[in-house]
Image (cartoon, rainbow, N blue to C red):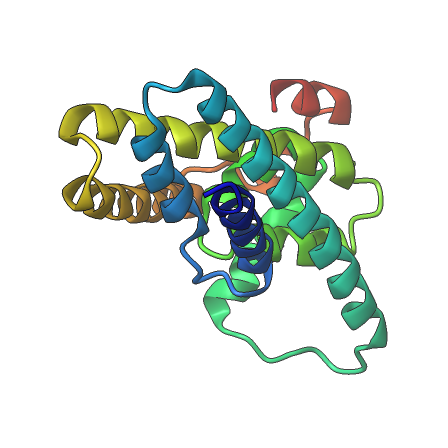
Length: 201
């Protein structure tokens, strides 16, 4: 029993880190579901948030350096879908004007943290490390909070876990739609001073 908690923590960290490279991994769902089972233990909840945030930040760090190395060695563009291309363009267009809010929002989009790191490679004045740390903490806190909310309604169990998975997916889809349709574009913020735009982020 004494080894079960460290092993579970390592598995969770590996899942969160690997989610950068394999975005379909259910890291957010696992964290939210686990939070539901830990409801009532504030110490474990705080530990879960800190552990998930640290693993997420480490995954960003490793992933960014991997993508920077890959991009530096590229000779021809990688063919991709039009949606992925548009997402990268929009991320690059907003990183300088709204670095904090863009980084946090991207963390909740499908493959958003990977796409943001790919765009950040060619945005040298973007404060990547600090923004990644803030976004990781926000992602962990919100994900755990969602799990606690659902757990308080349905209680710990399979029904709660299934509801959590559905809620995480629905939140991600809704945020993706909002980011694509309502998030200000570069044309809307290009005329604003960098400091002023960044202050609102």
